[in-house]
Image (cartoon, rainbow over all chains, first blue to last red; front, side, top):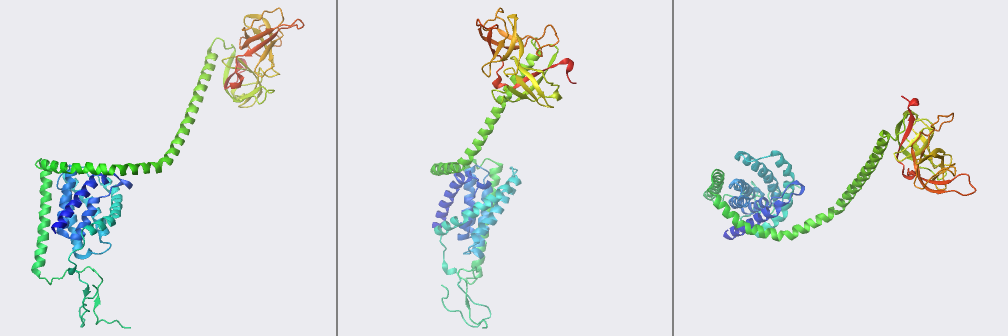
Length: 184
Length: 312
């Protein structure tokens, strides 16, 4: 767990640096990819809700600091996003092929409107038209990044305690037992 | 074959199954409690950060510290990415270079056309201004008014020294009207249509203009076509009349108002004397005259219409 935390911290730090230095400078198709969000969601899917929430808080803090913007805004959004996707991974999504794409797609949209809402609440400029204009491109680029980023994260954070996986299912109401060690 | 429901089935590998509660409800509850605790703490932390950052400057030093810590890495990332960014930019520029070149070429062509049109307009403007100045000057013949016309066609052959102009009977032009420019005499109208006329130049073999030396008005002769396409001669000037090279030849008009008056009003410049010869056997001098008008680049002319016969 400690090793995972260290790896996640280093990974998120590098991703934040790359995001603020390189990725955010390009707006192909009218929007920029959110590498931090995609990486965070991949981590949350692989390591669960608590890990995702803490990683989201840290990444948000770094992003806000790098942009010298109001601290806590991005942390709040990424904390919630990391937690929700972590729960999704803990419950139904783990090992499903479409889970990363579903997570990234849904959270990208929620994150955009969440950012807009928070900025509106704080009295910062929150142009809805601009957000809506950029959202399709951000959505597409995030989905494009999902597969490679998830592959890298899965390589860095391989699935743990396979013993918890349930491979056999006993149907309710049947009289015979399942074959031992089946499916593993 | 009926399905054997008595045999348990192997589930799909890694199928999403809620973790069982075999370990005990207390463990599940503590895990859920821990999750909520962590989430609540982080959300409250975020809100505290947000509030402090938004309402005070207490976190400025922390933020600055974090930003300063990030700065070297950002710079390094920029430096690492710069060659790739340059390469990407170069590639992108290369891809779009042809399209840009074509667009710029079209723009250059369009600008050239515009420049050419503007130069032509400027030149035409100068020509028309000269005509206007000539029409308003004292040299302009009395009892005439000028109708400006654009030259449409130049002489077709050296034997057919005529041009067409875009003024006709609708503009008051009539056959035998005299055509001039600010430089001098051009010729006379030979055929008239509604909006177009044919003008015979003074270099045409059929042209004959009663003219005189401006320095010696007694030296009267006929300006006719010469040996070249753009030269004329002043013929019928007797040897006793003094004509010098460089003298200006003007139309003589018909001062006496005889029965057959000249069609050309008096005092219109025709040309300059370039040579004067007189052989013993000839009765008249051989005077070469270079017309003032450049017939090869005629653009606009004035058709002199007698005021008495002018159309309304």
